[in-house]
Length: 133
Image 1 (tube, rainbow, N blue to C red):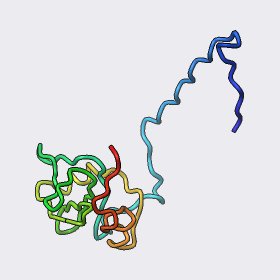
Image 2: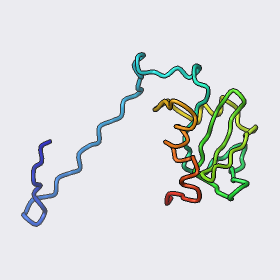
Image 3: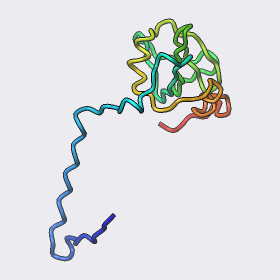
Image 4: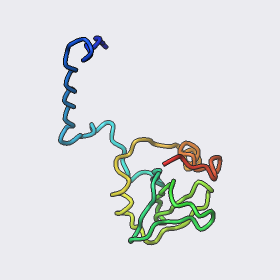
């Protein structure tokens, strides 16, 4: 990377105008060989850091009262919500389609469910710990 010292207004020069940000591509297509088949896994999960609103109601953990920092899990049995305190429940108000819409692209594949829990911090090790908003 190349760096050049900018002249300051104190040196009789006007400060440089901010560079225009490059525009994001219209769409991004993941190459076929890098795609993950969503139908072969026994579960899909993703962390949801903020409040989770389902059918106009904010999800609250019945065990510890948390209102954010969720792990949302889809299995063949339905959609589940898991709190950092490890309390997990079936969420009948969220359909598998809503799960897919909220999840976005697959970014990682875990070898098993316990590995996914540990790697996302929902194995109980961070129970009661929440990142600053």
